[in-house]
Image 1 (cartoon, rainbow over the protein chains, first blue to last red):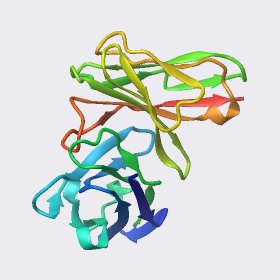
Image 2 (image 1 turned 180 degrees about the horizontal axis):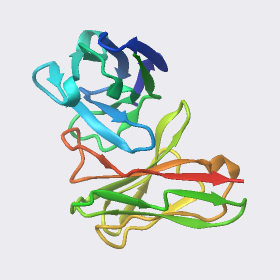
Image 3 (image 1 turned 90 degrees about the vertical axis):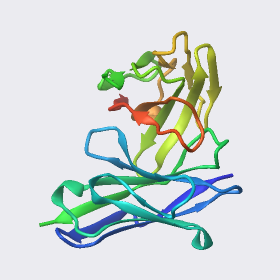
Image 4 (image 1 turned 90 degrees about the horizontal axis):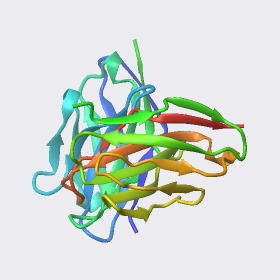
Length: 114
Length: 114
């Protein structure tokens, strides 16, 4: 069965600093991996996803993520945090192309200090 | 397109009452999902549907029922509300399944059972 672990339930960075959110997964088949963002009182919005091919994927709002199979990790980064990045971020996994259900991590709340 | 819409936005129920959470999408998506989100727990799948007339249980289906009479609508029914069902409920949809498909989320329904 697939599972997702997000390291750190709360992360705080200064405006302009690097954002780094960590996610580890377990899957019996090659996974498809996702990062979703949830702004206050809103639903989830897809930031980016990895399916196959290039292990560095770019998403919206300047975010990118790197898939490392050897480490079973899918790390989300943004070079320079903006106040508007304050939100909750969820990592999720589907087991390969035949999987039909997303499994979500427990979320990481990102705070951005002025 | 309105995307995925949910009503109501917020509801307070007494223990034992029943209610239906409404979800509709106008993207002609085949797949629809209901999740609940509890603090620190991420999103858990309650039920999902692969098309009109077809539904299946997710990870936490107890206490809930669904129906899918049309492609557009996927209501979630709580028959006997319990305090454990206090949560934020999200509906989502996707065109198909597998890792290639993005799930689009509604804004959520916040339910409080007292």
